[in-house]
Length: 324
Image 1 (spheres, rainbow, N blue to C red):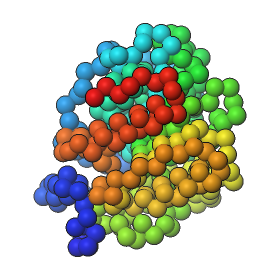
Image 2: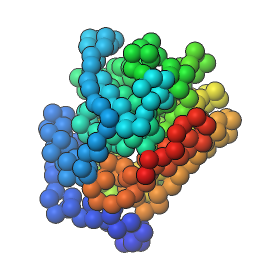
Image 3: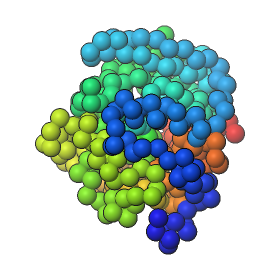
Image 4: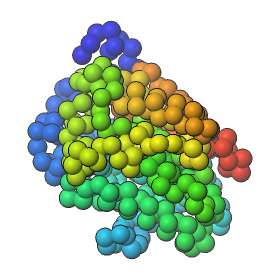
């Protein structure tokens, strides 16, 4: 690991990286997607903290584009029983790994901090279901939230969307897909989003290895997701490549300083600003990719969700104060 850059890491990020070196796992790209999922499912309980209680939690099936789609629904402790604000949360995992349990901690925090209802879809994963399967499922989940707002106890006019990494990619793309429609997302909350699948930003060189997510792993994720090289330039894969971002939902963008995705996250925030979209950009210079899912090892994870909720509250004056 480069000495100069590593000296700038937050202690909790360095600790997580040390844990990974002490018990090294085979890189995802050295095995199959099924093996990667098993490895990931074994690892995330060691990173996330205790599950915070919410008022209620249930799962339901809806009709997805290609069969039943499972949603996990969280009702925050102080959320209203009717016309509550809502959040569609799209989990990360490179479009290949991740599930309803891998980001459960984050969803609970959002539900309680924002006094809202959080809906997390178990969208289809690649390579069994390549692009655009995942975004089609996410769009179906958003449409369901709009059509079933009364049943869910939410306000159809106050649905935000959030996601981390590949989930941030899906959240950004969804906001572009439905902009200009009736009741599009009111806010997009993006944690270290993937916005350019060409993977040519300089941060892919600076942080190629030694900081958790590697350039080789990110290429493996992308190549499982896309059908062919031509998909890389499709803005539904690389939202940074869209002709204009005008009309997209106001955005909160969280950036980890030691992350191969840092440059494209910064670039996306700038493009949003240049195209007239209100943006709150927050940087965690000493953090690594995925830090919001590392609540067991320090306060930065919860602080980042709190910052996202504060930005959401700034965009939506009706949102209730943060539950500290």
